[in-house]
Amino acid sequence: MAGFGALWSGNAQLLWVDGTVGAVLDLIVDIAVAGKYAVHLYPTRAPDYGNFKMTVDGKQSSVPFTGFDPKVMPTGRYLIGTFFLQPGPRRVRLTITGRSPKSTGYLVGIDRITLTSIESR
Image 1 (tube, rainbow, N blue to C red):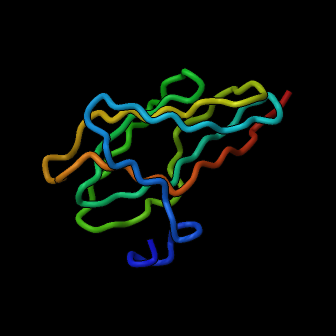
Image 2: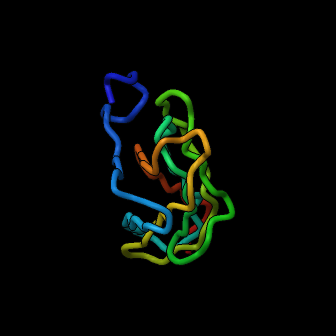
Image 3: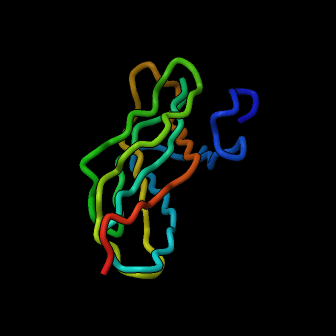
């Protein structure tokens, strides 16, 4: 990502290139302590990026993501929502829902996922 600026962590992102409407990508996060967490994505927008919805541990996020932008750019922290999560591996699922009429593709770029404990049990 260095060719687009130094705003991505480690100058890299996860780039999903073979997706189309309905395609699913599962990312696994490990939870050490049960509790309520704010879950943030750090996605990328670009001229050939698609739109997606998210679930966290099977619970739907109410915040969809629109991937189109005329230039390649990181969004920064993007709140998916708050979720109660049990310890162990938990799934963050991205499902491609479409694309902007101006977009030329369905690519998805994710810089990172962060979880911030709001309360724990």
